[in-house]
Image (cartoon, rainbow over all chains, first blue to last red; front, side, top):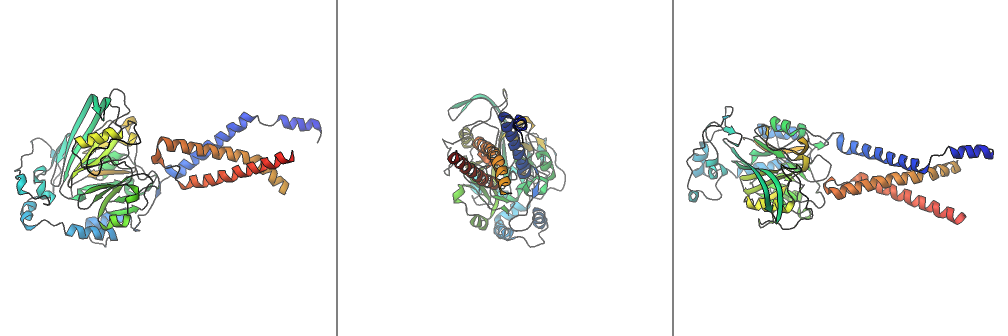
Amino acid sequence: MTTQSRRRRRKKLWPVWALVLADVLAAAVALNVFALFDHVIPRPEANVNGAGMGAYRTAAINNTTPQPAITDNLAAIAATDTPAPEYQALAATEQPATEAPTEYIAPVVTAEPAATDIPADAPWSVKFADKFTSGQPYYSEDGYVGNTVSVYLSRHSEKKVTYADKVIKNLAYYVMDIYVSNIECLRTAFANDTYGVGITQRMSEMSRNNAAIAAINGDYCGFNKEGLVIRNGVLFRNNIAKDRAVLVLFYDGTMKAYKPDEVNVDELLSQGAWQAWNFGPSLLAPSGNAIAEFTNNSSNPRTIIGMVEPGHYMFVLIDGRQDGYSDGMSYVQMSELCKRLGMKVAYNLDGGQTSQMFLNGENVNQPYNGGRVTSDIVFVTER
Amino acid sequence: MMDKLLKLLDKVLPHLTIIMSIMMLVFFLIDRANSYNTFMENEFHKWLALGLLVCGSASAIKLIARQRKD
């Protein structure tokens, strides 16, 4: 090879900037391929017990086929939850609805038993009897009163309001005060009724498909493979996401938040874990008091699930990232809000663009950028 | 044959190192912005880190060898 031809070859070499640019482009392509396989392409997965969600639901509804181990536990717990004879007469007056709900017109007029007559451990159908109706369910844009579920929605719009010593210029949030007569009314559902990674659906569709009276987004457990997933009594994923609190709703109606290192999944299942979410953080201290410090202080749209007492729960939706309408809230501000609302346990679910709330199939809030598809919802329905 | 392979490695190694470094940097930044993405804990990230370590070490060894020759 002559010196001249060598020079010609050298001239053909790419300049350094072009080489670096090519590398950056190659990295971008590699990242997109990773995102495609890790997040976008749906991958249905089986639950830990080996049974699918559809099989569980069919079995639970028909009560004909043997249930997985966890549902045996739940059945045993449920069997002990039969109302005492003195309450059975009262409970017997409540019949499930056979007709479609009608538009709400008249206010609820029910004989309210004196608080002192009802022991704290009375069945919820007795304890919260004044919250349900024994007749035809009725609904309005502000709530729903049914045979086994009632939902009261309040809409809040505040300007220059102070939470946790910080002023929020604009704040819009929605509170659903929920009473259920049995824990099976508080349920969860996966997108397309399928557990897996990358499987998503519009919340409006999920809400409609599951006959949800009230619904909020869940913890987006299908985003990746991290985090504990127990849904409607079935263990779907048995790993705890690092540094993220776990919220467990037990079959007896109690709710408890755990630090990740406190979680023993077998123990939770034996205690009758009905639902478990792994997002967080937990918004109230174990004493029920507000927490004064969190590591993240950014204001965003948020979704909260909380418990006032077993049988009485709250869904809270805070809109955000929308100038002139609502700025959103930080964790410390949410903690104070939950305390003010009277919750004993409160937990942050997925937020941001995912934050959405539905009542009777209608979108209640104003989601950031119109909302987005997600992998799971939390909802209440008649049971 | 061996010479050709080494030459190819010589050309490819720095690019692989740059590409994997950029990917790790993106994962790190996204994880800092929103740790719920758990990119730093995911299995792919662990293999990427291994690849970067191997490429980085090989590039460094080749550079040291070249410096000693010069």
